[in-house]
Image (tube, rainbow, N blue to C red):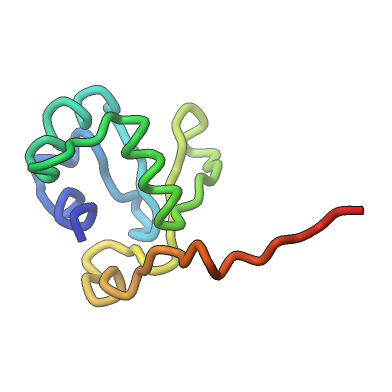
Length: 105
């Protein structure tokens, strides 16, 4: 929900923004995002930029390559779409006890 709030605030579009498809986003200015935006939305335990990226991974966001944006990572999650708060609320952290262990022989 915090990420949707960040993405929905017009003043943050210069730092982090949805792409035209509304299903993926890019981080335009990582340093400014970490210094200006994250402290506003994470009042306690403000993450560093690397910690923020780790949070995205934990929540299941994928990094995809988009030919329109070859120099930046594009982030995507099936339940995270522009303006779809209800879908966003369905996102859940993975249960660490529910991971399948695959043994390679």
